[in-house]
Length: 267
View 1: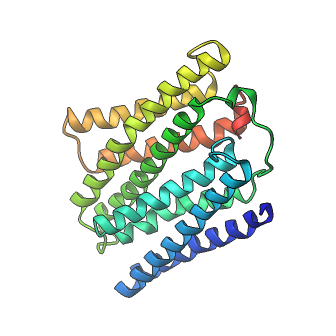
View 2: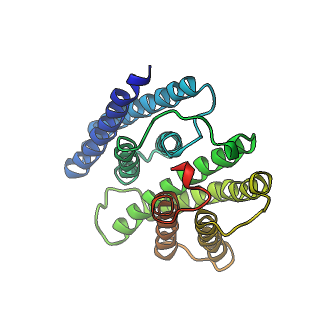
């Protein structure tokens, strides 16, 4: 069963790439049938992604949340599932062209990550793991969707790709994603602090990943503040959403590889 991981990863990645290519083709000729086919291909990719998560859970005999590879699998699944919900609920399949690159990037990265199953680090042997990492998966997934929609908004605002949904719709859905993701990001920070006290004897140690997770929280807190309290809409909040997701990517990738700390074993 271990050997199934690579073929399934390739199948998932190729499906996401194929769906992206179809959405690009849709924007070139405005054929709704192509958009529907692309949506079906995304559904297939998400199914394969889900199969990978289940397979990994069987292999490790638990929730696949113990290292960077498993987190990446769940992260890409969250992106795909949330996208499909939005595509069907709000009739926004075309935004897949701006969201799927995130799933494609994660899939390409997963093919180059060590997927060896190792004994669980003692610091990870806690029920807090499930709460902390699951909250991170949901938060990062919603922020990825908000990022993609914000990119689409800026293109729509510039007069390009006028076949995209109205700016007001894009702006509102992007905001809703941040609104949903922010509580989970808060849960991630709180459970992480409690877990740190249990594992290392301190709630906060200014570990690089802790620090940049806090920076990410502050960026999205600013986003919600200026939208709800100051009434900002449109281009300015779209740019802030993009900045927020860049901090997510930096926290997940760059900190893990460039700034070693207490979270290094998660990569």
